Image 1 (cartoon, rainbow, N blue to C red):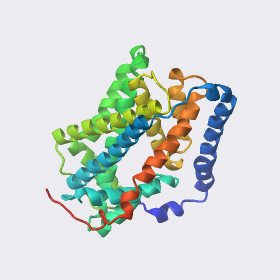
Image 2: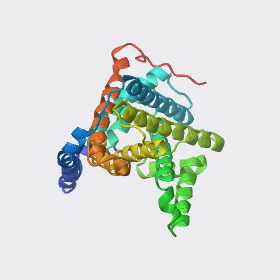
Image 3: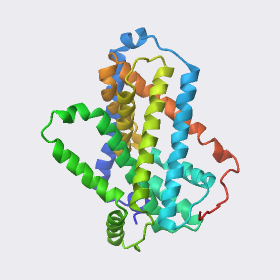
Image 4: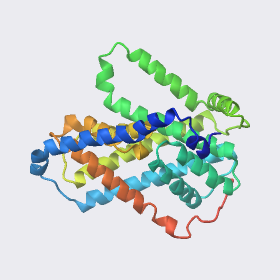
Length: 318
């Protein structure tokens, strides 16, 4: 299994490319966003921005709920891979600490952080890796399904390629949602990196239920973003389109391995997806404001780490 040392010892030829992707590309995207704000500053300044504490509190509460809910889903997948699961408090602490790695280039640091911390609690690297990969697979699949079905319905309706697109999506769902097939693919990958195969205790009905729960998490995240927009004075926006736009932008930022925390990429995609529903310059300003809001909420979510809550492992088999 690749580790941090492997990332640091990458071939010299790849380092310039990594520098371009992780630094220059996000900076270029940020520059375009800044230029859009500057060029449309008059319209942005003329817009009647608001500040509604009730809507902002609801948005922040929903976002914190999504964070905790996803931790609980990951803990359930860990039980399927390892046969036991830490308590919610311990799982939240480990997840919060490991997620600090998302602000470094590459997405490997969060997974490696989880593996390192769970190993101290007696969990094998293989089972923890499997749970983390399965968690990301469910997250990506559910997020893509929610965003594409909501935003892309009008587009695909007039395209002749829609049967092929649906067929590809169904094949991807089969690989991830059918436990025996996913386990076989995962063990094939583990053999390539010379790791022991694992077994995942997950039935098809349980897998489908998890998929629905991940869809609920994405919908709640989209709802939190819509409430945030209400909190800053943007009203009469289509709920499902705006929610799906926020989910799609977040997902693209997550998949942009070169951008720490999806910085720049998420904001650029969000501005593009929100453009049909807002005036000139407003989407770019909203993208920046939402990043600030989410960062503040995530910092608040780190507060439990300052307390004894979840410091000691409390494994549960039930």
